[in-house]
Image (cartoon, rainbow, N blue to C red; front, side, top):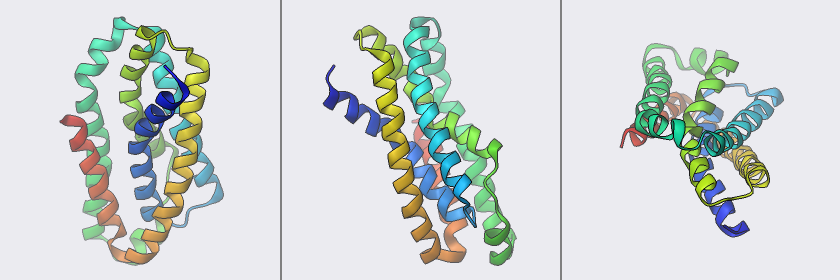
Length: 182
């Protein structure tokens, strides 16, 4: 497997993290520099760790992870997104958007949920005899760069949509969760 193929796989794996990062940047205000760094690191690290785990776990856990990954993704992102949608209807817009902070717990669950499919890719890397450490390093780096860009895009959209950003961000997370089921 060559550099181009691995780069394209990295971009594909990063897309869920990109969508969630856009949503986070629209919802969680104000975003601090530490939030930017935390999102870049969390999504990048998990997108790198999961294929590494898949590579070494091989077929032992692959069947179980693959079988239940959609349900796990749906439950995590569906719950977080559903809560965001609910809060967008219950609270005054100024309270939702001025006091909403991105917590380590939320970010952890988002990073896990968006990287579960990378585990199965790691199993494929094992079968293809890919040099795993450079590969996962590239995937993590690609994810980090794309997440940074996504944060900037999400921040811009959050400013444009103002009071509807919570609803839109929550819907995006729920859609990604439903996609995981399918």
